[in-house]
Amino acid sequence: MGVAFCLAPGPKGLLFRLAKPATLSFASMFNPHPNLADEVNRGIVQSEIEGGVFLSDLPPSTVLQIQTMHHCYTAVLLGGSEALLSGHPEFCPEPVHVAIAGSTWGGSMLKLQFVGRGMHLEFRHPGYPTPIITSPIQEIRDNVALPPLELESRPRGAHS
Image (cartoon, rainbow, N blue to C red; front, side, top):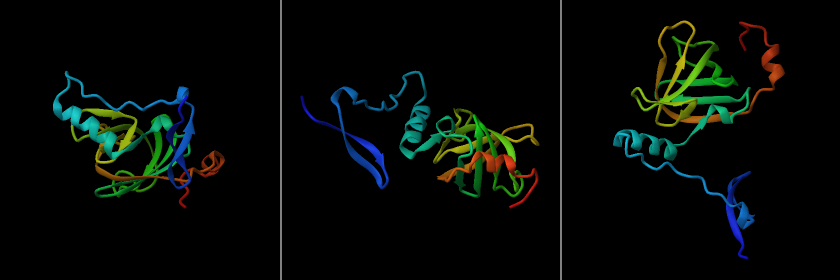
């Protein structure tokens, strides 16, 4: 029986770890679909290359810094697609409870509950009837999550 190695996250990036051959699994990459336009297939592949995060993979109270071409947004995740979003001088100068729909490539196709580099963030704001779409996302950073009690104990409307 041979020895197998796999890549695993470590404190300073990816590390090689010993793995039992029976436990090795390989993440499947997107295979272009023949019924989708080349532009759509290209966008899906590009989102895998550029990177991003599915909101469902993050616990509530995670804080994301989302740098777009024009603004830097802060999203405090509340669970599911719900977030407190701030960072736009007109739409959300102070944290606003929004629903993050996902990211687009600039058209009508949406990658649900995904925040991806090179894509446009789409969210629903309670004060506007149509979704708000940002300029292209340049960087996404995951800041330290706030403890849930700290989020709940803040007085509503308080500024810090």
